Each structure stands twice: as structure tokens, then as C-alpha cells.
Amino acid sequence: MMELERHVELLEKKLQREKAARKDAEKLLEVKSYELFNAKKLLENSLEKLKQKSETDSELLAYQAKIETMLVEYGRLFLKHPPSKQLIQELVDSLIDSISVTACCIDISCTPDVGINTSYASGRRQKWTRPEQLATTKTFWNQTEGILWISLDSEKTVSGFFAVRIKATRSWQQTIKKHITIFCEMIRASIRRQLTLEEAIEARRRAEASEQATRDFLAMINHELRTPLNGVLGSAELLEDTRLTQQQYKLLNTLNHSGELLRAIINDLLDYSKINAGMLELIEKPFNCHNMARMLEDIFHLRASEKRLDLNISCSDEVPQWLIGDEDRIKQIFVNLIGNAIKFTAKGHVSVHLDWQEEKLIFSVQDSGCGIAKEEQNKLFKPFSQVDLSSKRSHEGTGLGLAICKQLSEQMNGNIQLNSDYGRGTTFTVSLPLTVHHKNVDDNIKTRQSSQSLNNLHVLVVEDLKTNQMLIKLMLSKLNIFPTIADNGQQALDILSSESFDVILMDCRMPVMDGYCATRKLRKGGYAKPILALTAGTTSAEREECLAAGMDDILCKPYQSQELREMLEKWGANYSPS
Image (cartoon, rainbow, N blue to C red; front, side, top):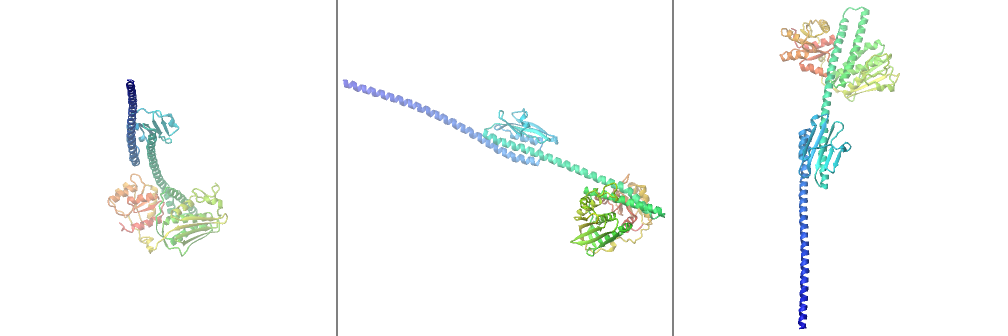
């Protein structure tokens, strides 16, 4: 019995142990289940976060791709088109999205070009107040509101800002900020290019206006100076053919000398102005270099004799007889240099030599005059500059002659050199690269049948100034030509409607109707006979205007009887006298 009870007791204990073990197992299972639940929950949360992050990164990556595409597109647009309100507003609207950039504002004030002025906001935020920090820094990041402010100020011409509200993680904020900064620089560069272009256009307009004003001034001053000079020199030339007492002849010589001096000064002033204005053009054609040397001797022989100077002008056999160049401008250089040598040489000699070396015409003028000190030589080729500028100086002149010689030489791709010592004379050497003219030129090129008589040549002179009318009538009467005179272009047209002429001498500047307009009307109406311009204009633009109007040739004022005769022989020979 006791053994049974003991066996039962053992069974109960065993049962209790099993119950306790089952309870512990249930508790452990419950704990493990809870842990498993928590792990699952944690995993689900992690997966959700990872999904959200993946979606965000994907959207930001898409946004970055979009921005990069916009950079290329708007970069091309801002290069192709000037900055405008419409283009800038389109850019601002394109930057807005619902994830990273929620609002954007741009404000530009441009003083030189008000067409660029823009004040525009896009996105959720509409009120924008420029922070004070932009006065001292180009960019400002407002951490509290998440707004990037960028200054668009440029010197004193452009002021403004670009502001963007950014909603993104810190890592993406830097990327977006860099993109926005690039867009701002794109806008700045576009505005700078536009303002630079407008400045260039305005500068060109001013330059063209200045050039036109210079041309107009030169044409006007040319006419106003040369027209009365034509009266002075023409009257002096005609007076020389009359009976004069010895006193009157001396006065006439003084008048001629003063008139020629005035003409030289006017020529120098106008030539220098034309060179500086880029209006002087070289007219290259064949010329006889040996004849030019003989002509220089004829020009200066009397002047050298008056000062009892020994003048020697020689031309080497090596110099080709015919060269191609602007004979008038080459002659102008030579005349200036020889004239200066005679002017500044009190006694002794002036030696001139022409040579041909290495396809260049070498022209040297050597004198035994006062010479020029080394420290003064740098002044010689400067305009309006002379070694002696005092009121006691003994030589006349503007100080432009050598400056013009230098510029003319350089325009012909040549140069001019000076060798001088004070008290030992001076040598100027000019080197001009010229082309040899190999074609045989008949002597008949000098004139067209110069022996042909001009008697009964029917000439119409269109000239408004009574003084010039009187002078040209007297000059023509010496050639047995008695012209018909018209006071202006309209009167000339009226005369030509009922009368025929062999040659028309047409002044260019006249009241009622000028010579250009009258010539155009005649050519348009089929008039084919020679029309020769009588003009004080010497610029290339004025010559072109004469030829464009239909004039055949140009006789520049002041002209001499011989020049008038040669012009009539050249053009009047083509038509039989009426």
C-alpha cells in the first residue's frame, strides 16, 4: 500500500513537472512568437522605408536627368536668342516640380536695356523679399525656409536675384544648388552678351555717324576753301596775260606766291584729314618716272635760282621708264621733300637722285642746310609739329608736310628715313615698292590729238558763282571757245532741251538743282555726250559720287587754263564741233 502511495506520489510529481515544463514551453513559445512578430514588423518597416527611399532616389534621379536636359536646351536657346521676359519665365516655370523645387522667383532690373526687365514668381510661394545678406555675398542659403538666394547684380547696369525653395535631403540639396547656380550663370552670361552686342552696335552707329560727319565736313570745307581759291589763282593767271607795270608784276608775283602757299596749306590740311578718316585712296596707273624727274626740275629750278642754290636732279638709268603707282601722291611726296630742302637751305646745294633697287624706287633729297639736331628729329614726322615753333621762326608752314609724306609712304607699303646732323645738312630717303609697267606706251598717251583745234567747240558751263563764270569764260576765250552759261542744273536742263553741245562743264554744288541731280536726269534721258565735273571736292567719296552720277571726268578746283585745255582736248576730240 505504501508502495502504491509512493508510486502515485511519484506520478503526481512527474505530472507536475510535465505541467511546469509545458507551461515553460508555452511561455517560451509566446516569447519567440512575440520576437518573431517584432522582427516581422521591423522588417516590414525597413522594407517600407527602403521602398520610399528607392522611390525618392528614383524621382531625384529623374529630376537630375530632367535638369541636365534643360541645361542643354536652355543653354542653346540663350545662345541663339537674346534674353527676354518670355524665355526667362519659361525657364522659371520649367524648374518647378512637386518634390525638390516647390517655388521659384526671378527679379531683374537692367538699365541699358529695359526690355530685359523681369519680375516673375512660380510655384507655391508668391511673396519674395530680397534678404539683406545678398548685398555682401553672391549666394545665401536660408536654412530655416530652405530657400537658396543668388544675386544677379552686375556692376551698375544690372541688379536682381534668383530664389529657389528646395525640398530634398541634404545630399541632394548640394546637387540641386549646383544646378540652380548654373542656370543663374547662364542668365548672367546671356544678359552680358546682349549688353555687349548692344554696346557694339551703338559704338558702330556712332562711328558711322562720326565718319559720315567727317566726310560731310571735308566735302563742305573742301568746297568752301577751294572755290574762292579758284577765283584768286584764276584771276592771277588771267591777269598775267595783260599789260602790267613792273610794280604790278611784283604785286602779281606776290599774289601768285601767296595763293600757291595757301593752296599748299589747304591741300596739306585736307589730305591729313582724309588720311586720318581713311578716305584717301590710291589711284594706281602707269606713269613715266623719267618725265616726272624732269618735271620736278622745271618746278623748282626758279625757286632754287632765287635763293642762288645749286639744284641737281638726276635719275639713274636703272630706273624703269614706266612704273605703276599713284603718280600724284608720289609727286606730292617728292615736291614736299624738295620744297622743304630749298626752304631750309640758305646757301649751298640741294641734290635729288632717283634710283631703282630691289624692285623699289629709291628717292633721296640731300641738302647743305642747317640740319636737325638728333634730339629734335622725333618731332619732324608728327602732325602740326616743327623744330622751331617760336613766333620768331623764319619759315612758314603748318608742320604737316612730313607727316603726310610718312603716311603716304606707309600707305604705299614703303618708308621714309632721315639722316641729319645739326649744321651739316639733311638727307631724306624714300623707298617705295612699285611694279614695272612692261607694255609699250605710245607717246600719244600724253594727249588725245593735242594738236586738234578746239575752235568752235560748243561748250555749256553750269556754274552758279559769278566770279567762276567770269574766269572760265576768259580762260575759254583764250582757246577761241565762247561758252553758254547756266546758273544751276535746272537752267542747264532747260537750255539742253532746245540746244545741243559737245561738252558740258558741270559744277557739283549749286542751288535749285545741283550737278549730280542734273547729270542723273540727263543720263536717264539718254544724253550720251561728255559731262565733266567742275568740283572743289577731292575725296575718293566725292569722286565716286561724280562718276556714279554719270560724269565722265573730273576737273578739280582750283584749275589752270592748261588743265582746262587738256580736259577739253581729251573729251572734245570725240565729237565734231556743232
